[in-house]
Image (cartoon, rainbow, N blue to C red; front, side, top):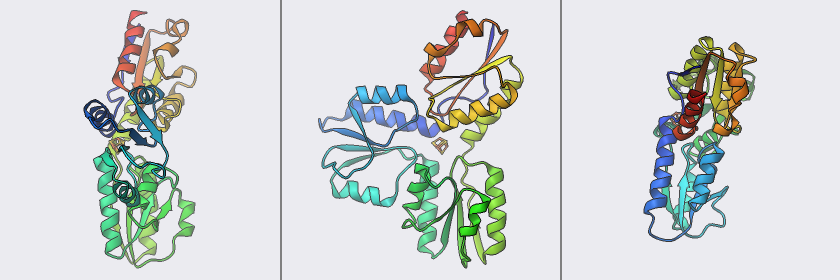
Length: 280
Ligand code: SF4
């Protein structure tokens, strides 16, 4: 069997940085105080388990936290969360991805200049909630062209994108906003990491008999990769979380097997799967 890797797969720069910073803190924190992560740092149950085993407690709000260290994940949070953490004298380990930080900065600068901020993205995604937190929670969030109905006419509009939305969707929404506002500033803040992984998965699926997509069953970027591969290989796309899920009896049927992984899948997990396939 020939095992072929996608051209791009696995951890993106932002997630890798977040995990490195979290483990650095765990190994170097000498305060003996508790270490919290505000929300799941990464959508991968094995990594979360590792963090929890190392003593990190996952929390959903800072309400009852009075001491210790709080890790802010790569999706980022609103300004209010930093204020609460500072007021409660918590040590902050900020792993917000620099690409997301840039959006927060743009949003906050343009709010100060009197612009109505429009975020093109999913309103319930933590990244979007966090960006809105830099707009006094007054941004208009557009997930779909039909949401444009909620858009009131504003003189000055500043449009930003959630990092993981599709460029086509962003461009067509911007076109409509452009037509109905007097002054529009558009910031193309989409991150290429997701798009590059999707493109590479699609190319690979075309050139193999079967494709394995590795990543958390709760990871939305992994599920998107699975969907893309299934469009090309509806019956021979396999979504697995770890090496334990490799179906040996199925795999030995194929001469070429492709391997890709979501942006939140650690390299050890990917290498373990590839090693098992190579041994078949
Ligand atoms: S997908 Fe892009 S924006 Fe999101 S964490 Fe990764 S590098 Fe950062």
